[in-house]
Structures are given as C-alpha cells and as structure tokens.
Length: 90
Image (cartoon, rainbow, N blue to C red; front, side, top):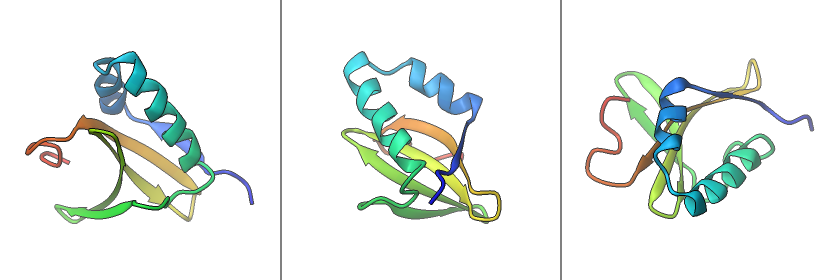
C-alpha cells in the first residue's frame, strides 16, 4: 500500500519549534509512521465545531491531525503540550 501524503500546517510548525530536542525526535518518528499507519494504536477521534480530528499521544505532547481518504492526505494541525488547553481553538 502506498504511503499517505503528509501536510504540516504553519501552526504545527510553530508548535514544533518550541519543543525540546529529545521530544522532537520522538514526534518526528511518530509523524513519519502516520504516513503508513494513519490510525495507530492509541489514536483518538476528536470532534470540534463540526470538524473531525484525530490525536496521537507522544509522551506529554499531542499531535492533532486530520485525515482524508479521498486524497490520501494527513494534515498535521497542531503539536501541543498536554494541558487543559490542548484541545481549545481547533
């Protein structure tokens, strides 16, 4: 099966730039794996304001993404430190 196309939004890039190097390596590895397995074990479905997202957990960080089967695209929307505001303003 062909891997999915990966799109990283500017918001996710800004989030990523503020993360320590050790966590960055783990996050990059997890995102690369999403291209092959878009719904890995532990993935959760999130509904926000009529839009559908998914999230994976990497340590204390959450990668929030959307998926399109039609275009075989995974869009990384946010990479956030887990706290009470992680899922606000999606």
